[in-house]
Length: 225
Image 1 (cartoon, helix red, strand yellow):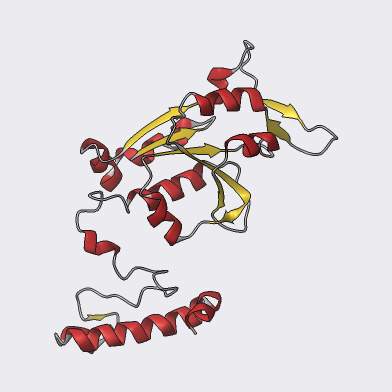
Image 2 (cartoon, one colour; image 1 turned 90 degrees about the horizontal axis):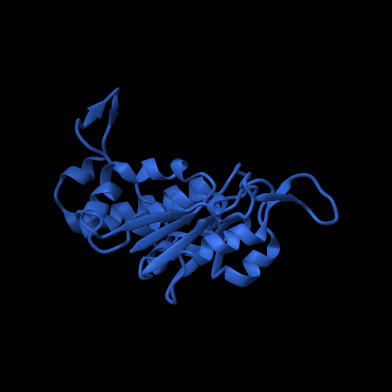
């Protein structure tokens, strides 16, 4: 899997891939990352990438020319271009599973008030949002998606079973999980978990998943009824 990040601030993204699981995936050649900065594709000495909106309005937009050149510098026939924007559809776990089968994903991070709408029309395969809130730029959202997708790439996680039974599978949240000690600050673990009857444990965990989803995410719970 190859990730290309189109961003004005590549140093906001690079450090995330220098530690832990994703770093090991890069060392094993399971994952490759690269960057293109629209400032490097401008035609003026000041590397200006922003411009006022036609028709007025607060905030600047990233100009289409340098952004277009940056995207095209990374594009191949099989590239899948994703824009991060509050106007996009909500990113879900099922999207991560599906996108992990792609060979190359280009993440385009907006800044300022956004990007020229024509860029979406020309290049976007998908536009995603990570929630109903506004960030100063798309870099954090790009990292969220790339992390979620990468862990679904075969071999990235040391144990593929780690992907089973996670939150949002079948529209349910993960059940309560515990480790030792069995008693911590007067709170005990669920005793059935320690009895070794895996059939009963599975049934119990399913019931707890339903209860947890109903309490924390009633919107998801509706999908299970």
